[in-house]
Length: 212
Image (tube, rainbow, N blue to C red; front, side):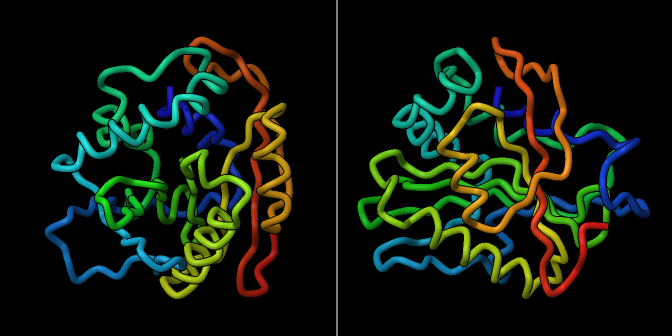
């Protein structure tokens, strides 16, 4: 399901592959860690951990269209738990995994972002999942959240942003193109849930960096 985000990458032939890094996972207890700003009044960025499993599960269940469309199956009862436990494959280099929820004043999530820093390369930040409540589509929230995420990543030393887009998900294809991402590779025959997809690996260089 959502965990198959890793399948868009390949350690042996991935872009920007460099040295190994010792991974570190963050928890909510590390309250000194800066997070992206919430670009809209009334939203609060929240670093998610196991204590937030019910909150994240309610968010997934309120937005079943994405999972159904991309994975061909409904939201599972343990969808949030699987996402919280999801890690890159054994042997892959990375520094930190950020699971960030954006919470509105009533306490529920309206967006969720999973980011892995230095995945397979120092300075390459991989957006494993970027989900916004479908009721917010078309209002500019997704673009604002991404811009805030990009600014924060740059401040933390990111040199590239990278993600995968399922071919045929036209909304996602158009959205990420508008954000300045370019397709650098396509991977075919990737199983996601009950479906098999072709996925575009997309890259956005930051701070004047190139694609290589």
